[in-house]
Length: 552
Image 1 (cartoon, rainbow, N blue to C red):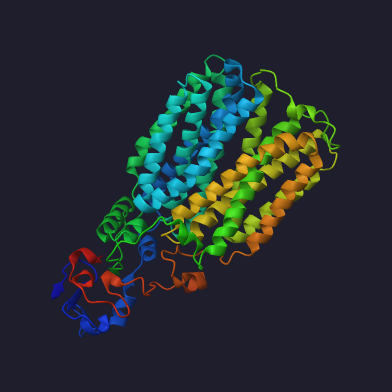
Image 2: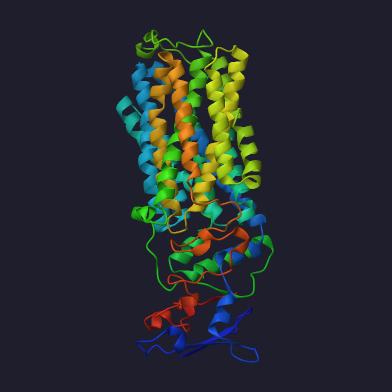
């Protein structure tokens, strides 16, 4: 059976004998380059094959990538608004429905419970059905449940809808998965951290709107208005492309080629000359057990713990800022005698202008932290940057144990917020880069679930323990952060400058970034369906199958 290609670029002639049932496939396949003086051997043809990273690099960073990053940033911006809504509206809801402080605390906690459950679910959806599908469904359902929240008639209905809102917004963490799979390695961290900047920007916008709008409208109308960005982003998500790497793993090379052609048109570039590697069969994605195979077990466990500590500390410093600003003494209550404020029911009172100002400047503190982390991630690397910023966070907390004046307390809280924000965002980037395509989305989802457990736990420390034993509060946060630094040292890889891995058996993990070859051929990968060793002959793996050949 012969196949001749006349498409532009590198054209190959393939002949496959599908009647044979034994022997090495190389013995039964002849490859020759049309126009070449003589036929080449299989090894030479393999060296001229292209990987996804070869194509991504050749297409360059252009208009398509700018639009992609901006859309992903808008998704993160809208989620930043939605996530802060309940924090802003909590006092208003408490007054309208005569709720106790515990009732309000449950509202805050139930959303994070929904996120903890939903993050892993959406990770599976992203790996099984596509990154775009995951984001589109997540944004659409988030808009739907946020609109319903504005019409919630009773407290119990509000709790249910808050859980569902948390469950659906958890899918937004997959923006990093989709974006990273289109960006070349030397710009990946910059793009992902630009997206991360959109979260505090959304929070700042939310605080500004609330300080103005809540003076003349009800919280129901305000929540409805805050759902509008989610609707806009849902519509924009239809423009997003599906991940080319995802299509490749699903055995759909034609879709992969179509996406690359679309990028080339947007960027005004051309596809590289060569033959693209494709799979002949689908690979099952989205299996949680793949995270615990020998190649990934240590990385999964360490990053799960790191996400727990980072978000435990991040939301802890957010809550500590409010609590410490309200203390009469800069030292707080550290002798264990002040237990009243932890148990009493707070009176009904809405937010004052000073409260909005406090939330505003603490949100602004995240911006310099992320900017510093963006610079350091490409200079020092992902692991050193995460560890160094986390250590600075520890030092800031230990300094807060001293009896300093209010100005010094404010500065230390600002530094702590900036450092933990930068540390977490780099950890987010590292998690996206270190896992292969076949487990990337589920890994991000699982780590996000671990982080949400930390968020649920931290109010008991930042809002309760701080009023009884303030020194123990700082020691606990600092100790966990220091243990996290030690665990991060045990991670096997530094992802700075590395191309993304695709399969569990990729050899890229043990190579230096500059030594990474253009092609990685092993028992799992083969060009156009030809397996390297002892493949069974069938029409499915013949070169002559047009749907298995993607030629540029």
